[in-house]
Image (tube, rainbow, N blue to C red; front, side):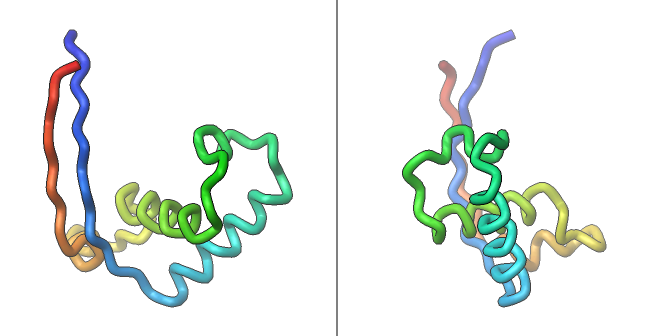
Length: 84
């Protein structure tokens, strides 16, 4: 099977509650520097980590209570596929 890469850009919206929840999560992770969460995140700012956490939760369906919830958060998506 051939490996493929897809680079995707999302424009998302999020609520103050989602932001505050993600900020609290990142603050909690700071108290646990050995967790898997930190792999590949060295040198990122708190703002970057918070937005990544929000995007992860939106794309993973954590905020989806019905089939169309993700479409409320994902405003735009562009993808480019390349074979590696």
